[in-house]
Length: 181
Image (cartoon, rainbow, N blue to C red; front, side, top):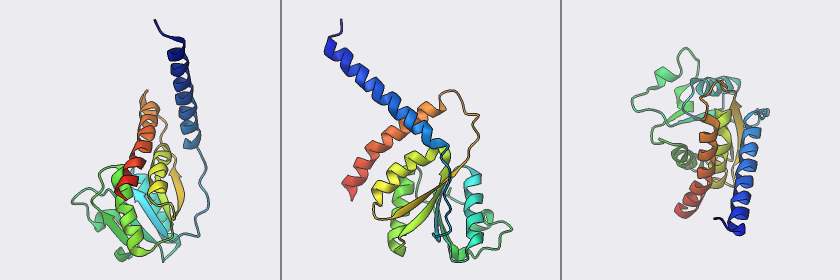
């Protein structure tokens, strides 16, 4: 039926997958660091809490600049900074990205254009590890401070497996980023 080599290969691949999945899960609940040193923020759209966290950080430092990447067409500044005393010149709305890879490309252009050396990356805890794989490979000379938003843990049954698969796929997307650079 199966040769010994096939069984060994399948066993090794299964063990690698399990180790990778456990590593992925381990980083979901990792704590955030103190981000007072950076005055550049990138927030990936999705959960409304991401934007609220970015605005809260902006209110701590009047020099902070913010890129909101993956903004839906038609969304305006007034909808984003409701009742907040923030100069709209400090916020850039990025309308081009439609995926995490698109967020990376849009952010890289903005970071290079403005000669930023670091930034705080805001996204959900379950999304951060995948985002970091892409962002760090696209911008190896830029310091990225991950700011993980604690998410609601009431996900559907296969959610973490699906996210882990996307995490594995992000490693393939790194090759794409390498090719286009």
